[in-house]
Amino acid sequence: MSVTAIVGAQWGDEGKGRIVDYLAQLSKMVIRFQGGDNAGHTIINEYTQKSPNGKVALHLVPSGIFNPEIQCIIGTGCVVNPQSVLDELKSLESIGVSTENLWLSERAQMVLPYHCLLDSYKEKTSSQLGTTKRGIGPSYADKMSRRGLRLGDLKRPDWLKSRLGQALDFANRELSYFGATPFDLEQLYEQCLDWGKQLGHKIVDTLPLVQQAYQLDQPILLEGQLGVMRDIDWGIYPYCTSSNPTPGYGVVGAGLPVTAVQRVVAVVKAYTTIVGHGPFVSELAKDDKVGRHLQEVGGEYGATTGRPRRCGWLDAVALAYSTWLNGFTDLAITKLDVLDGLEEVKICMGYRLPSGQVLTRFPDTLDLAPDLNHPDRRSTLEPIYESYPGWQDTKSARSWAELPETAQRYLKRIEELTQVSRGVTPRLRYISVGAERDQMFEIS
Image (tube, rainbow, N blue to C red; front, side, top):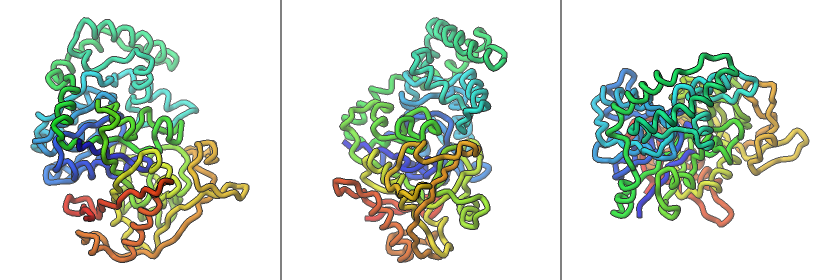
């Protein structure tokens, strides 16, 4: 059975949407398996050229939507803001993209307006975590507390009103703590009914669709959001998301047996970026020449919020940790071209503690010694680097042989660094040297 999981190997923003858009052309189904509209996958192809800025940022809709013959599913593991879906569909349809092939799991949780407001208020407290204020954390909290509402509830008015009333009682009590105006049940209920009218035909039991595709051995892509370093269990807690962007959760969020996944494609940016708070050992200072190069040449601004991304060298300690947790079989390296023109490139191989001890494993958040007085909760550890000679141009390369030899050596070193204890090394398979579809090639 051909199931491939596409996952972020770093802190997110690695270019997963680009890889899914590329591989979706050979697939029959793409399933977004976790997260909400708090992050985006930026896509550039022949459809997006019709948009005002030549690109489209997808926040909930799977990146396979540009292929009309493919079934696209927003899976059960997601939290879904109905209004965000409607806005995204309208944006896609305005540039000629058909959305008839999109389905939403009736079991997926809803993000409602009070979730977003609570998120915003909590982010203003002293314990701010750098969230996007899209209501993701409060929605997942309601899910785990079993007071959340699901998309399927929009099609059952009586049940919807009963559940909404219970959820709103709790939400309004929380909002009263911040001095906020409570939500009116009838007004929010009418809004939900309107969402149900607009989206009801797309809200279905997606399990039979997934089962059929799997049993027919059709190629299926599982699309994750963010990366393992933002995982709720294994990421830099508490500066993380509220779900698990790993292939282990992919089968849960999609509705597949645990044995289904055959390939796990790790999307690795050729350097490292982070949006939001949390320790980042290989971060370059904002006034650093290379840091400015990475941000400006790489266009490192959040697809959802527009926030500038913090930039730094590739972190091999975090990458090895990610490799172990995800079981990568293939590597897709993105934004190699951003490093063009640099005299040297570096890889962080370890972390030196203030005591002089060197860590070569990725530790828990507090062991990264963040400076809690800094607004970004920066790390106080010293990165230990390996340096490699740079190169001038990769943008024109359309095959491995056309890459500069120094770039080849850098890529092979990344491949070596993802070897795990059993001697398994993920295969270096896809290289991206630009934003266009033809600037991605496969290594045979």
